Length: 317
Ligand code: SER
Image 1 (tube, rainbow, N blue to C red):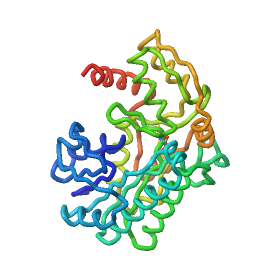
Image 2: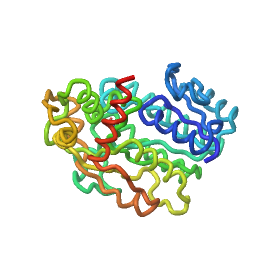
Image 3: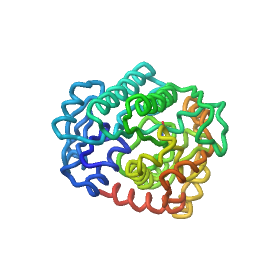
């Protein structure tokens, strides 16, 4: 990776990843792009930033040529709950954008990363220790685009030799940009509300387990996978990764260790609850560990301490 183009750079992953890539590869070698351009964002202020609509392949190609890009990190996509509300748009953006990004990567011989998700699994998938290779029959539009995306990325690798790589991210928790429109968003909201109101009403029901991971670990995972020698990768699109399998009560206890007055209540959203129940409880990350030494630093308790500290500073500003 020398010159990296990021799409969806103002999203939850993009905001954290852009900062880290600028530190690691040099500000002049990271081209952040998005369809929004808020002047207040650090992504826009602290480096190269360009407007790019991923459904416009010509503009994407011109951007790659202008900056002599050699790596594409394609993040622009709708998350699960938004995709369920707007399924046609989700297909158009998630698949149309991916196809354009893959085509540009094929033509210009770029190294390629795009995230898949635990959303690529469905109700018939084994719920615990979900294997790398297993039944994938998702029942959400988001999941349909993620499975199709995994297959398309594998196809571009097999047919055209494009160096495509991906992980199935679990719910990602971060203090910078908000996720927005996801089923696992409760795990981010809970920290904001804990600090603002010492209370949170969860839209996901008690006892609902899903995989999660702290953003610094997610960013490390992308870099580790992209830096791994190509010949070591057997699975490519896409590796199971996770740091913890947790339910709302686990967050409640972890937050109460810092704020004993914190109270958790429930007002379950049937749409997001159904999505959550169609996903695994805990996925098996063995292949990522074997093939590119995937690892994580943050447990629930360590993440909670860091989230509360970082968010406190942010909310006081
Ligand atoms: N965090 C995502 C969502 O909830 C899962 O990939 O939609």
